[in-house]
Amino acid sequence: MRTSFLCAALAATFVAGVTWAQPATAQGQGTSVVVIDVSYIFKNHVRFKEAQDAMKKEVEQFEETIRVERDGPHVVTLTLNRPDKRNAISTREECEALVEACRRIQYDDAVRAVVVTGAGTAFCAGGDLKGMKARTGITGGTGAELRESYRRGIQRIPLALYELDVPTIAAVNGPAIGAGLDLACMCDIRIASERASFAESFVKVGIVPGDGGAYLLQRVVGLSRAMELSFTGDTIGAAEALACGLVSRVVPEAELLPAAQALAARIAGNPPQAVRMTKRLLREAQHTRLSTLLELSAAYQALAHGTRDHVEAVDSILEKRKPNFEGR
Image 1 (tube, one colour):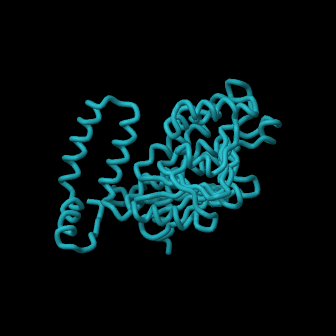
Image 2: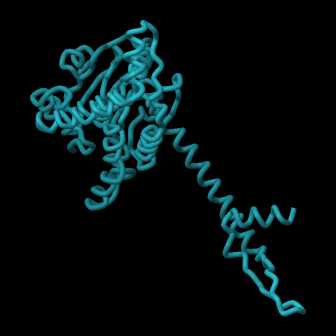
Image 3: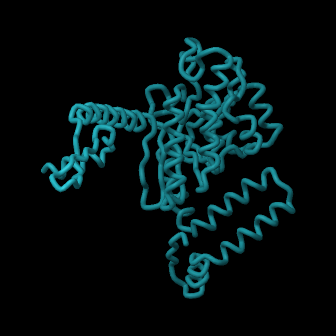
């Protein structure tokens, strides 16, 4: 019992509470003796418990903001989980939760596709108008403080979500307004329910797209349409969103999530490394020269030809059987 207590104390890094004494023996040789400062260990146990409680609270706040669910072994659904505020993004904690969810996905090789949706009747209502009026949350502080709040808060979301290696699908279940529309544009594919609506509405409240919308929207619908939506702040419905290419399909409300998850499963059924490299090529093609992209394509193709999944894909076609891709 005493040995395990000592090991536990040391393992918990209570090293500062442990000292070594070297008393002399009759033969003049020293024997090491451990002297434990129990009060120090007790204090650190209290601190450890406080850290545990803080971590538990952080996890609970994370789950309150973002619900993360596995749909089979390779598909993850991220649900913005604040239906009481129409999934508006208004605090540093809400930004951090979404960034952290993306970080976990990025380092999970089993994940091959992601669906993003909203709980309740809205996809994401953008910012919190009450918070803007009160100058609280991510819209509070002086001009310099607000700039840093954007850089350290909501602007981390496009850097995390837009740059995910795996394909992402926005299942837009309701209004996607302001930052909500931009969040949908951060995803690679957008599917809308018949009751979805969209607005790049920042000008309506006298501000600019601060979360990357000026970069993202024009790459989805083209410059002219993006300027029209951004300058007017007009709201468009699902049918018009489909007509201008903002979404790739519109489905009945009850079919939205199953349709998005079925699409994700079809994507996940392909060789994952080939899918990831294909996404990267499509992303790079948006801002690089053709000659540069061809060089990158040649390098990626050499990598793809060397994978086991490439061999498995060819064999399965020739043998007329279902392939089994392992991501190698």
